[in-house]
View 1: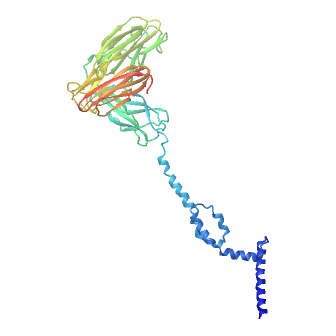
View 2: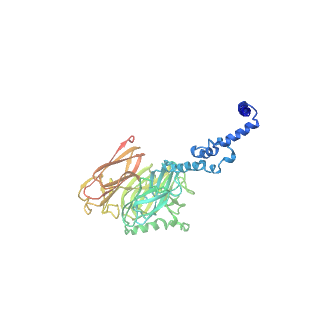
View 3: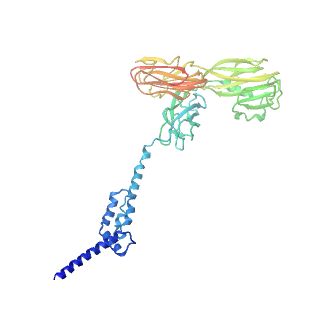
Length: 503
């Protein structure tokens, strides 16, 4: 019995040493024998590989730990782990966030303009119902180009039969364009002013408004039987049958003779746009000799009423008639002498003008023209019983200065003490310089130079001083001041000063 028990102990001890020897062999670097491989499979199968793979997507926001996954057996990798990776959803979230950024970015360009000049084809004095073309010359001083969709928009005052808007010509940066608007003079006499502004395609209205100012004069039909008789006297007996095209003459009808006495048949008949010639020692036209010739010019025109000065500069003799009245008769040889005569004309009156000239020898030349004399030598003030510059003037007068303090009274007889407006216009000489225009005003006023807005204080208010600056070139410039009074005190004063630079 003891022998058997010892044998069992010996057997157990032997087995123990066999296990120890096997473990020692496993720790040595060998070429992966089969028992070791089986032991590794048994040990790795016990590790929680599946749980680690499932935890990776939720603990790490980036796919960087993914290289660990291949160390786990492929069958144990959970399939849902791949689509739940946040790579694609997180890629779209930043794009949605950044898409709103352009809304808050600064604009890439801005729009502004400058009025370079304002022109009316027929001048500032017009007959009732006469169509005319108003031109504004404007420059794109912004950084945005004026594209299709930009318009020149009527924004206030008198529309003068014009459209609500016209297309604004396309203009690049710094480019100057002309905006032409067809208008019609109103039927009633008076001073009228309208305001227009450029509007961009996106609806932005550019400041300031630009103005057009006209004066409609009342035509007066006068009994001038002499006028109708002058035309046939000047042309009927001397024109050969080939001169039937006389009605097509748009300027002066010139009849040229090869003598100094306007005798016989004219050698040449032609349409002369103006009487302003300097022929020197040359012939004035085909078939005419260099000296000893004469010319008769005739024309029928309508001009605004007022005082006019007719002038002539001639080498040699010249004489001028208006509606049969001889203005001056200088029918003698002379060296480039100048003559003048003044005449008063009714508004809308038909004028038949005849000019005769002769040249003897030497240099030949003649210039005949007329200059309107200012009926309003200072400010022409048109006073309206309306605060919005509407309707016909109650009073038109010459104001020596715009310097009035009417307090609570009316500016003139027949005018209300409140809710009235005034338009002052004047042409003045300026040097080439900068100018600061100033106004002391209660209530509202605006000041324009050549149609460009310099001061804009068009709102109700107590007495206050306002100013604006502009740079002018040397020469004559049109200054327009518009003013309105609402209630209580009425006051306005205008003055200006030359400045070298602007603050």
